Image (cartoon, rainbow, N blue to C red):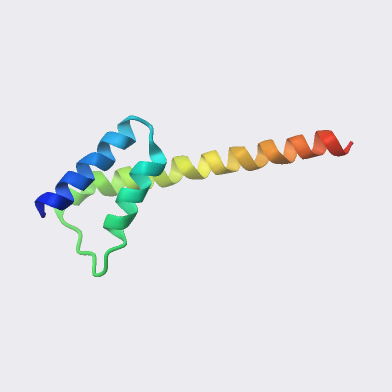
Length: 77
């Protein structure tokens, strides 16, 4: 793996552990959106991290949506 790429992935890992998920997502997305993507053994850690970031961001989005809907219901009644 290229040194520049490794540095970026390490930065994404640092953001992940600091719970800066949007920042981590942006770096990981750029890395995994490259075409053609050829997985290598050292990518396993980052693939798992990317999946976790996507999952957590999805949960936050769902929570935010239900909060907005519940506030709307309170105002409308």
